Image 1 (cartoon, rainbow, N blue to C red):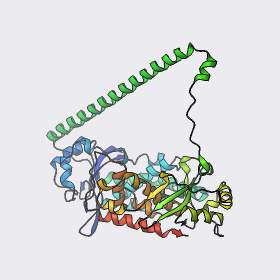
Image 2 (cartoon, one colour):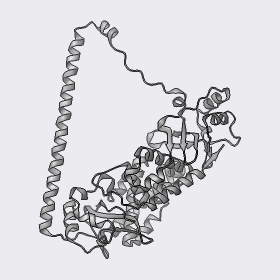
Image 3 (spheres, rainbow, N blue to C red):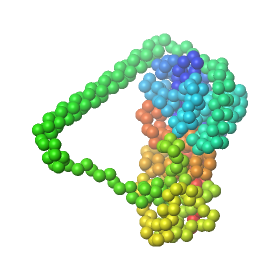
Length: 441
């Protein structure tokens, strides 16, 4: 199976270096992963111009047999510039773990550790594997902030931070041994350097034009505001207060908005289900999903009416939502028969047909439907403490790479190549695991 070849930037002690990474792909029944290099050397370059000059002129390296390599020498310098999602600051890791383990910190560290694992796998860096296995927290990063909450989570993060403080230099030293900056053809480098300079100049010109437009819009807004103020000054304050148009009133939250719990609808290949979910945390960065259910099993119902009836007479063993401060309000309304189960469009999750759509590649998938489905599967996995979803959706995995391309399209990236059998298989496995968690009433 042909998979993308991706420009990446590695922040190393010798500077920010650019290279190419081929995430996991399957060929003739075997799984492969590779970086641009040869034998024991990992090739890296000071910028995309040097990288472009190399790939256009050198034919002896580890990626030359990759199914998608024939496309790479024809790429422009701009297309070989790593995007923000593929810039890994390895030097800044000790500083990163000094922060609180919020969503952004854990997410960035997870991406860095994932690429370091890949480097260790491809380059046979045993010491790096040893370090990444010496603290349990390294293996928990793909789950997000959930493993690092509470007293046990704080200890897990502290142990991870101490390991990095004591041994991360060994990781950098191991990479320093294998990283090589090869020479490139001087004439080709002159051409690619000009390409890079032209691209940067065009980008700066575009930014300047946008800044000018913003400034013009601001001036027009200021002039309009001054004119309005002058007009208002000529009117009596009381009269203008009476004549002023009322501000648009905020849309009422409704009962479910007030209690902070959402009815949700899940449409599988065969059935539509209804259940409840909320997010709980001190602020947006610490919100964790909680579903109607217990022990990693979600209580689902085939109609709003059966859900409401259940809430009036819930199971004796309780559910995780019962710990919410507003749960009593839900139970009271359900008991007196006034509870209405109404699902917003944003809380409707359609799994039906997605596997078939993924088989056709990025152009056949509705990104909104996929985004919501990924949200559902991820939320349920976080709630149940299941790592498999996070692992399969990392960008180093075929499914994660395809999903990221669909949800965050980038014209400088190579489109994933068919067939997508492995990706569809992984997606079906995630959906099966999810459906096994449904406890139908």
